[in-house]
Amino acid sequence: MKNIIILGLLIFPVLVSCGQGKQKQEAKSSNEKMKTFHDFKVETIEGEEFDLASLKGKKVMVVNTASKCGLTPQYKSLEELYQELGGDKFVIIGFPANNFGRQEPGSNEDIAEFCQKNYGVSFPMMAKISVKGNDMHPLYQWLTQKSLNGVEDADVSWNFQKFLIDENGNWVKTISPKDSPVSEEVINWINN
Image 1 (cartoon, rainbow, N blue to C red):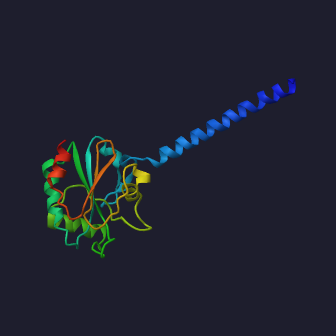
Image 2 (cartoon, rainbow, N blue to C red):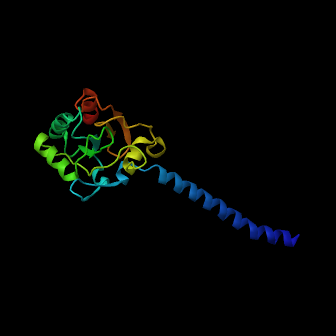
C-alpha cells in the first residue's frame, strides 16, 4: 500500500505538468492564429520597413492597386478621401499588385512615379506584392482567411478591392472593387 501511495505521488505531478503544457501550447497556437492587422510589418514603395502597429488607434482602408486597370481612376477618389478625412483617425494604404491581367507590370519606382504624376497620391503606398495565389503576401493571407482574421473569408476578386480595418487592428469588412471608395457606407464607417 505504501508503494502505491509513493508511486501515485510521483506520477501525479508528471500528469499535471503534462496537462498544463498542453493547455499552454493550445493557448499559444490559438493566439498565434488570431493576429491583428497591427502584428504585420510591410515594405513601403521606397523600400523602407513599415510597422502596421504604428497605425493603432486609426481606421484603415487597405486597397490593392494597379496602374493599367479600368478602375485605376479610383486613385483620384482615394486621394480625395485621404485629403478630406485622412490623418489622426483614418488612413488609406495602397498595395500595388500584378495579379489581375498583368495590370501592374512596373517596378516600385515606376508605380510611385505614376501615382504622383497622374493622381498626386499622398497616402502611403507599399511595395508591389502578390494578393492571390501561392505567393500571396502574409498580410493578404490574414485579410482573406477567416482562420487567420477571425471574421470572414474574402477572396480578392480584382484590383481596387478595399478592406476596412478598425482602430484595434480587427478586420471589419471588404468593399467590392467596383464600389466607390467614397460611398456613403465608407464615409459613415470612417466618421462613426
